[in-house]
Amino acid sequence: MIKSMNLKITVFILILLIVMVSGCSFLQTTEGATRKAELAVLNQELTKDQEGNTVVIVTVKNISQITIELAQVKVSFYDSQKNFIDSSTDSVLNLKPDDSWDFSIRCWGSCQDVKSYEIEVMAGTSSGGL
Image 1 (tube, one colour):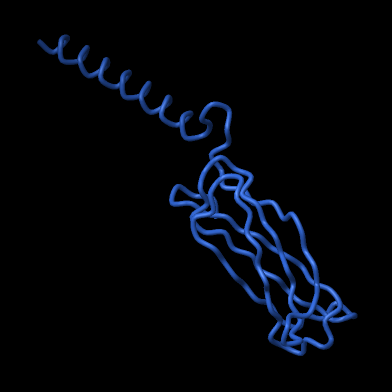
Image 2: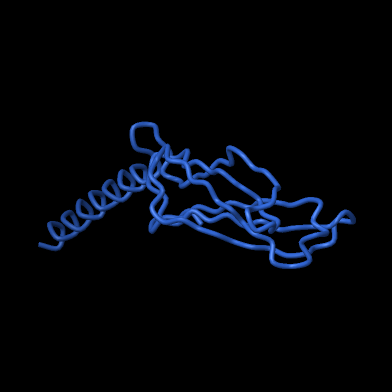
């Protein structure tokens, strides 16, 4: 009786381990496609908008094989001495694989002094990624 119970427990644990291992590898790849949310910056330009405000136009593309639930772009603005002036963030929801999105990120500080900028992109899904 005890031997039979130990055998059942051992078989159950082995089956559970097999299911867990195969489930984890499914999360990592699906038909060779990465499961991580990834964005690529296609274009970027420091310019003025119609009202004369300093903006950075940024085009990003979802280069992963999953929908990015939150695609976010942050631009930090600097003067000629690399002193921080301002940063602004914008985002879009549910960016599908291979889709692109244009962001217009505005400077709100002493923007007449902007000479350079840095872009940071973040991508997130409910299964991780940010």
